[in-house]
Each structure stands twice: as structure tokens, then as C-alpha cells.
Amino acid sequence: MRSGTKCRTIVDTLSDEIAAGCYRPPTTFPSAERIVRRFKVSYSTAVKALDEMKKRGLVYSVIGSGTFVTKTAGRSIGLLAPAWSGSDFFPTLCHAVSATCQSRARPLLFVDTSSDSNEGLGEKFVSLAESLVSERVSGILCHPVDFSENASAANEAVLGVFRKADVPVVLLDCDIVPPPGESGYDVVGIDNVAAGWRLGEHVLSRGARRVLFVSMFANISSNVQSRLAGLRNAVAEVRGARVDAFDMPSGNGDVTALADCLKGKRPDAVVCSSDNVAAVALKALRAIGKSVPGDVLVTGVNDTSIATLTDPPLTTIRQPCADIARVAFEALDRRRRTPDAPPMRVFLPAPLIERESTFSPTTPKKKKEKRK
Image (cartoon, rainbow, N blue to C red; front, side, top):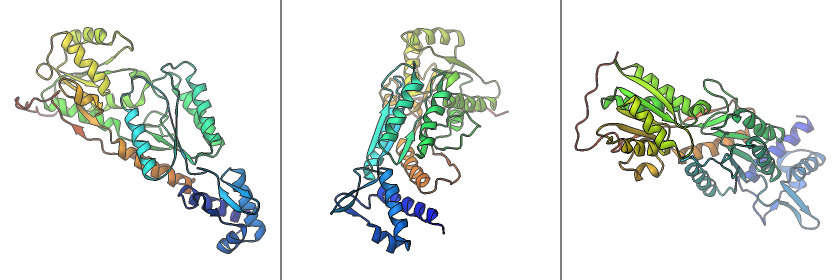
């Protein structure tokens, strides 16, 4: 084995051990002599490996005392995400990631754009990415920019920062390219096509035939597009059923605009892209005198706290945030240890949670019609 290869092996092995918390202060870090004995290398190779780790900011030396691990060096994880005021899912996911890191004794550095505006989003995201690199994080959990017309450019710029610094990245919730495309990054989330299909199959089993899919920013969100595709697949299997889509405008006109749409479409089921959107749909239906679930069935996605606070409570798809955080954490450690491993795409189970918005306990279930 060449000395350069031996040096990289030493650096990679000891870096992994730092990340695992094997050398926490005030424990001294292995000296060059100990590295020589452990890895059976020359003294010059051991010194070269230590110098490389010092350059990376992982360790430092104190004359007469020894070598020590830099505080949180190689152990902290960066969490990078866009701020979006309409998100009902991401705060829950952030909490799950934080809890996972705490349980593994790994510091978490969380940054977002701290703005509800998409203006200059790419530049803000790049700046935040550079700040995480400067903190020498061991890896990044990144929720790609979504709900923005310049999302693709912003995501590529941010990931370029991490590629240049050789910092491993795992994407949360979705890829940076719409399906069926794949970016080559590890991705952990749910199968949104399957989620849409499951919601469609559910309302169809309750007798719905005129289904309206309601979302915000459907044209620029790959997850929302996938849910709509799954819904269309389910509807296509039932004779006489049809689905329309309505992209709700952002702002104070949400309820009025949706109410006008509901009057014209007259759906008997409203499948929404999120729980927040479903809450708006409930208001709009109430405004035009429609009852839920008596006149119209309503569903959401995410199963956040709002799903149990609405009247009636929402049938929804549960996002397994704790599992997403845990699997993403493990995928990031795997990526650090084996940077050349094939990319993983992990779709975790996302169950349907039935509540009163699609079924009243006092009302018998409607019979399913024969499929095509």
C-alpha cells in the first residue's frame, strides 16, 4: 500500500472515530507513535496523517501536553432548509432531526433562510451552505428548495458548495430533480405517488366520484405533482370517476378563491396536498354551506397537529418524521464511511390515518363500485 493511500486510510478511520465520539475532551488524541503501532506505518506517514487532520480542523496540538480533538470537530451535523411560512411539515421534521442527533450525542447546526420571500433565495442558501462548511460539519442533512420557480438553480448552487468542500449530503423528503429522474444523492422520504393513490382509493371507497385535488404551487413542487399523479392513477381505476385540480393562490384570497372553485366543480371529495391546505378547504366548504363529511369528504397530508384540531379532524397521510430523521442520520454516517457507495433512495411507510373528515362513526360506509 502506498504511503498516500495509507495516510488517507488513517485520516478516514480516525475521522470516523472522532465523529463517533471516541476522543471527547479532555481525552488526548493518539500520538504519532501510537498511530505507527496501530496502523503499522512509518513515523513520517503518521505525522503526515496528523498534519492533514490539523488542516481539516479536526485536531490541534499543545506543546508539552499532546494532541486533542477540536471542540465538536467532525461530530456536528448541519441541517439546511428553506424557510416557508406555509409549511406544516418541516417544523415537525426539524424537531425529529434534532431529537435524533441528541440521542446520538451529535451536535446539530440548523440554518434556514429566515425569510418568507423567495427573492434572492439562491444567494441566501449558498451563503448558509458556506457558513456550515466553515463550521467543519461532518455532513449535511438538506431539505431541497421547493415551492420556488428558481428551485433547481438554487439547489444546484448549494450542493455545489458541499461538493467542493467534500462534505457528504443526504436529502430529506425529496430529490432535487422530479421523478422518475435521480440526482445521485441519497434521499430519504416517502413515496408521494403511493400517498396520492392511497388517498384516492380511500375517498373512492367512500363513494366519491367527483374528486378535486387542491394544492398551493402545484406547478413547481415535485412532491405535490407526485401526489396528484398517484390520485389520478387511483381515479382512473374506477368507472365514472374523475379528478380536477385547483392550484390555490397564496395570500388572503385563499378561502374566497377556493369557495368559488368549489361552487363550479361541485366535488364530493376534496383531496388536499397538505393539512394546511385542507384546513383552508374546510373553511371554504363551510362558507358555501357544505358539510364535511356529509356533503364533501376532505383529506390532507402530513398528519401534523392541525389535523386533529380542525372541525372535523382530518383524514390524512402520516409523515413518519422520526423514522425519516433516524434513517437519514444513518445514511449520512454511511456516506461518510463509504463515499463511493451507490446512492440510496429510501421510501418509508406512510400510513393513512382515518378521521371524521371522511367518515362519521354514525354513518355506514358507502359500498365500493366495481373497478374497470
